[in-house]
Length: 155
Image (cartoon, rainbow, N blue to C red; front, side, top):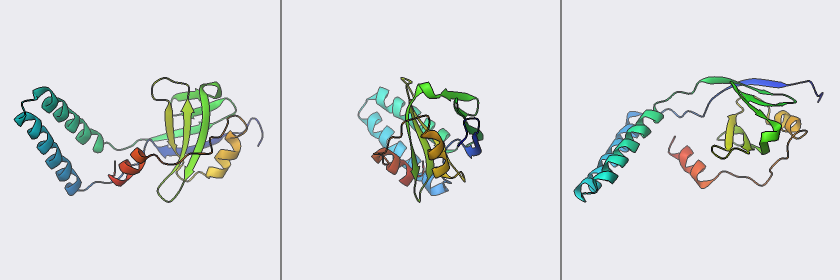
């Protein structure tokens, strides 16, 4: 691929799973039981903390992803307004299976160093062939237990 070419596509910020009333009811029931248990045990700090976490979980579960533009050039990867120069990326890998298709990058950042970009209709092999010219590919990767659990829980 020529050095001045680039790959551009649009994708949602994250994978969204539609949730029914049963999902929210189950989350609410579990939250009330856990907070109630800590209230009965008179661990007010834990009860309040877990109550706040449950409210945040409800809030984030209702969020809809926005569509962002992703661009891969010879200088780096742009994700909306954020630019990741290649010198700040340690390696990449692509996950393409029946559940999802993503470009994953591991950056040098101390916090939030794993970035997952949705590929949507973009051909994963074209993205891989382009990035292999600039970055090392991490080939021994698979979904973590946490990722499998989050997909199963539709979060």
